[in-house]
Length: 110
Image (cartoon, rainbow, N blue to C red):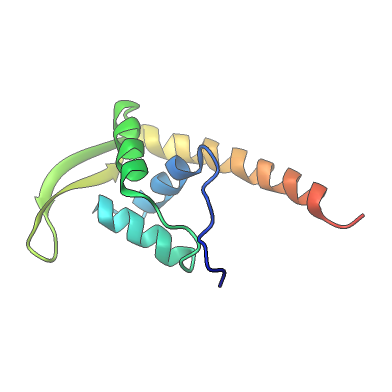
């Protein structure tokens, strides 16, 4: 594993959050932990970027939130995916897949 985690490309965090929320409602720390775990520690999410993205997704009505209690008995805001968020995830996933395929074509040996 490299010493430095990978930097997120612009627009990546929103789609990663939307995908993470398909597994069920969770709080911000849970989102960041899931992404870090799923990427084998390659992607680490800065708290400021995470909560900015979550607020942006809420404003777009792709995510909704409500207060709850964590497993450690702490009060936290839990986020869940809306119907509009699921539709946005489908569209964004298609865009990222096309983008990754195009970049891979350029990077492959001639």
